[in-house]
Image (cartoon, rainbow over all chains, first blue to last red; front, top):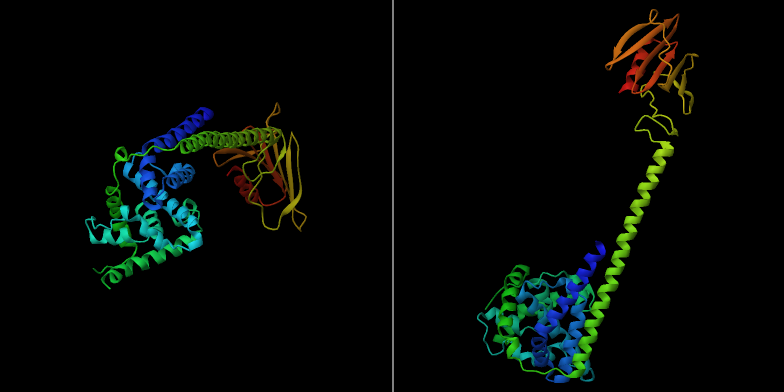
Length: 175
Length: 205
């Protein structure tokens, strides 16, 4: 009985992974391409993002399509930015600089309904990803750390900095 | 635009900001991209890994569950063996080899201590004494073919905790005897009768 249950669970996980792959791979590619501007590297980022997702399948609730989609976008963005930094390491490109490349999905064209959303959208990606995982998806600091290959203290530090940045951004824009 | 960025603010706006962000993305069907063969091969490999990982993870889980079941089974069998080999006394008792469940008085008259305590399959006996050379003997035997060895003409019958207790008085020596739950109990000694009655009651309770 237990064995049957486990076989079903194994098949269920495989089915879930396949479904995510079939349903969202192009959207993930689009997100990665928005950052990397390179087809080959974008595919690489999607592949790496799926490797991360594979280890956190239990965190994905398929029934909530928007939440699943948002989760995959955040992971892909983070992976793509990581890859971008790795590729540009010799030029010491910062996250802030890298974030300039994601204009296509950051709402720079002012299409957000609300000014606050606009500010949040313009937040550097490495800040925005963590804030969304914590405050929109409800993940704990430790879970975010595992998901993004960081330490918990690093996550807490980044959240603190993100809040400060978010607080300062309207003044910077006005200035 | 002024606002205070705290947890309440973030819980309120991050979800909505995320929804707005999703609206900016094109529909999956409208994204035209043919993935390379290399990517497809890599992903197929990943899918195979996922299957293997799932099987490995679940095999480990089955092994763990089986180990727990085995441990519980062994514990139950061991406990059954102990219960069979040594009867476990519920309270006021000790272990003796299989035979019957022993009980002993909770109340002991002031100044008395246990001088001797022994038990076997046929009898459980405790002797108490004090500094004035007074002694009390407590005995419990399983009820067998023998009946209460009492001269009913010489013994009085009193009721304690709903049991009939025979009281035999010989000069300063008093003996209480009763039958309860398949055992014969006797408490005897050269002490005040009320003290023996208290001991008797404490056995029954």
